[in-house]
Length: 120
Image 1 (spheres, one colour):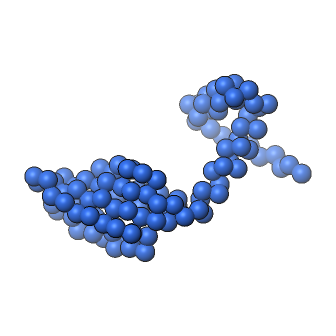
Image 2: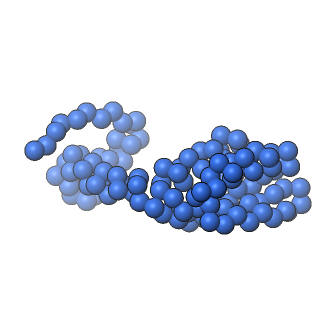
């Protein structure tokens, strides 16, 4: 049995949905949404590994990154810290579910760090 739900999407996302339906010759938006959710939802609890590059421009923010690293220590497999001129570069390898990886990225961005996902 199906359950009908309503979803409000930003115009750009709705346009992308419509394009995917057309390109893949799907029966409609519902089919596309069902397929996308069926593939996406399991990744929320699946344990994955992600490698992130975090760049600190000011040495004063080093303590803030240290605090984030401490908060996520259960998920961190490896942490490498390097100096380049007046900046610091940290490479952090985490293994956790996607919610934890997203929380790590969000915490870094919230503190204003440049963060780049190297692999996930």
